[in-house]
Length: 184
Image 1 (cartoon, rainbow, N blue to C red):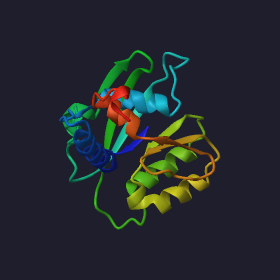
Image 2: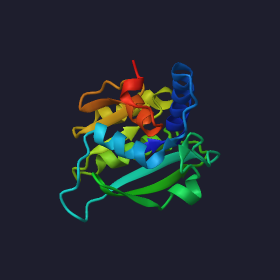
Image 3: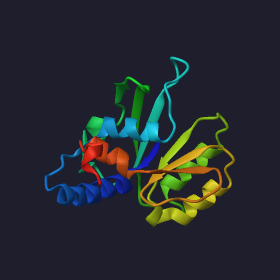
Image 4: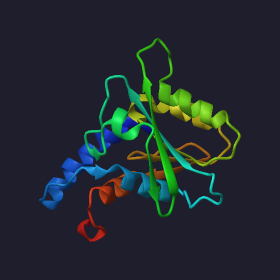
């Protein structure tokens, strides 16, 4: 799973504020491990067949983004990078953080990571949580050349052949403790 930190945190903040007003109660920040598990299952992940297979989550952030404001744990360097957690359905989930430094590159680091992962012919399920507003066209170009299975988790659909769109909102709401019967 490749996650754009800014896109995820911004979406979580907007959804949290909106749903707090709708439900007339303050929603807690989202549980990061719970969100990852729900998001992965929504995107088609399943329990690994072999004990040495692990789900990996890579968070891509800008050099100024040090914390997820709407998630716990949220401090990227001390609480997320290099950490892992156990999930009953996904087994062990390993997390890492890569930081995009300002450069003169035409393509954002996130898109470069997608291109690298798509070039790897290992047959892994790739789940993307991108910032479609910031680099949507570049991402669509990278995905257009892909013949493998890719799930894109976002609030706005990405319509490229070979990709499956997964709505981000349900996993976020679950991770914030919103029960299905609370949503109209």
